[in-house]
Image 1 (tube, rainbow, N blue to C red):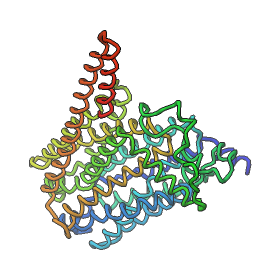
Image 2: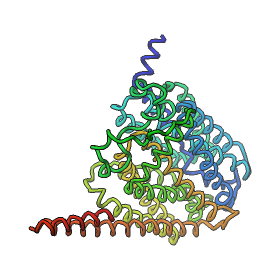
Image 3: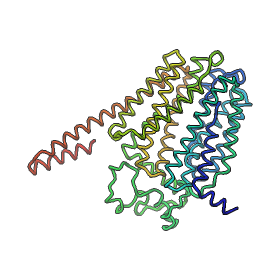
Image 4: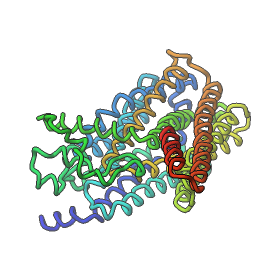
Length: 493
């Protein structure tokens, strides 16, 4: 029996299957597209202003407060305990959502939902600690796909139950609770990882070098910057940034890991290319999360749920499907992203801004639905591009670190937007004015990257002209002079 369990745990198929089942059930929440109508219905009897300005902002604040400590604890505890914690948080959230009443109770719901989203990192990081590198592509595809499938199925199911079977929102949340309970049970069957990405690395090199050289093997020899910035000839001769000559290493293992994380992060952001992609990631993700958090409030304002048919589930299902299609399409598009990537960021961010402004100024709920579909598809397209543009230049550890830090920056920006624009202690603006600000926010993002892309394209064109000019027959003195000019010019670019 023990041998069977050991073989089962070491096989990549078993943990992937359990994690996919867990991912399906924890994403299968048919009540989620109908949260705002549920809170404003007679059962909970909250007003739109209470939901918008007092309840929903708590999720942003708790998510921000919990994200960084949970990120570190997740890696230190080796993922599985945090996945179990996520299941517990899910169940508490929906129990309160079903049986508690009042603004304060719903604020507690949002706090626990902040715990849920903060612990989500464990789901996506767990699998890399229990399978070998050769299976990364497969398991990533399976885990990502199953959540998209579950989200689509949940939205369609919720819409069918509301529109055709006339099921109340209360029973829709009861179905969600049952699905989350199944996910919680599944989490106990996950094998406990023996290693993690940062605190419990078990590399062969680490074993050979001994405990005093752990930091030297923490990150790979490949620098995290862009490939064109790499000098392979000197990579093996100079001291690595992880081991500066003559500098004593911290004795405490946790402190040593934190120091290493800060060094890796500094190196990653020293690459100009990664810096610009990360800037878009943080800015756009903050705006996207803010829109996602309050879009149901806008829909309820345009077509009140107590007097109109609600199609939130159908819209979410179509949006998820379009997001999957656009994300998949990126893999088949042959574009020089180094040259035209920032132009794409600018163009599609302009489309996002246009969709949000359309939702702001139109009185038609159908126009709001259409604008949301285009907005979400454009964002998912761009975030997919940004993800692989950053990942292609980084090791798995540094990518995970940069991914977490970019999301942390996005959450900081989102919190500022929430405090200033949404919270009743701030401006406490109405939902239409909020979307006017979100549209203007994406317009600023679009302007930044359109201007940046124009500068890049013009500089490359000028560089090519200079290089062509240098290929003409020249005397030795003239050739040296023009080489110096080109070198100075390209260095400035």
